[in-house]
Amino acid sequence: MAILVLLALPQASFTANAQSESRVVAIGSSATEIVYALGEEDRLVAVDTTSSYPEAATKLPNVGYIRALSAEGLLSVEPELVLMMEGAGPAATLDVLKASAVPLISIPEGFSKAAIIEKIRVIGEALEVEDKAQVLAAKVSADMDAAINDAAQSGAKPKVMFVLSIAGDRLTVAGTDTAAEAIIELAGGENAMTGFSGYKPVVTEALLSAKPDVVLMMDRHGGANMKETLNSFAALKQTPAGRNQAFIAMNGAYLLGFGPRTADAIRELSAQLKASAPKG
Image 1 (tube, rainbow, N blue to C red):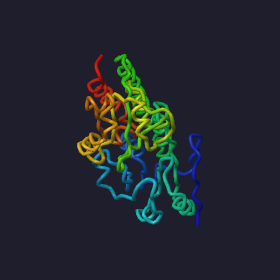
Image 2: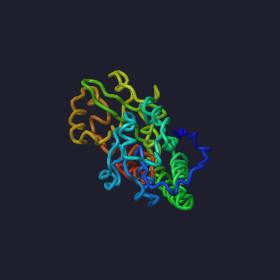
Image 3: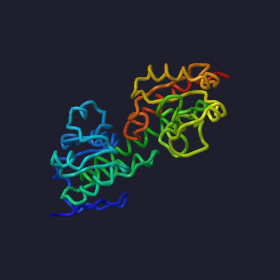
Image 4: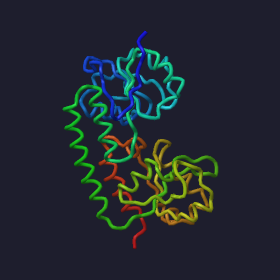
């Protein structure tokens, strides 16, 4: 049995004739979006649950959640190539895949323009459509520059708290080194929670001290329902965001995916921040 090689990127080399591989599985929303943006969607045979855009991707067989994949589910669709975002797993599944004959391409994650361009380059190389990838990368780069520049023109930088989840009386929010912080800053805002890295539950004292002007959340649980829940937090009512009902809900993959649509996400978030943030 052939041994799968988990390629270390970005300096990966592809010895197989990837162009002949017509059965591709994409794991991760940005990976799937890039395959479609490259015009190579006809080669896709399955995606994961985070791949909700474009709508056509949701019609493909689904192999599970990016961090809870099963080797059996992946291998059942008989892939010839698996494009997998960094951080996918679990490790036990990757171990089984490494013992199969299916090439597995690990795509580096990142939350910047450079990271998006690298994702496009790696996937373009894996699919042997480098020319298409160069064109897409140039377009995305120019669009990102324009969106970032426009967002920076507003001057004021509202303090934004990103809420990942709500459990009982506790909010889990985004600290530093997160996709949420990156998109907030690119859109002209400032992360209100900087005393820790990653996503962590926040205590009332920290929430009051942060004084967020705006609360940002994903609408995966229903934006309206989350807003109603946020209104039930007494401490939040004492912040500028709570007093002004400055709550923004956006699609999670669109907001945090850092793929071909990120420039549009920056523009949309920037416009909503300007509309929601306190005036003066």
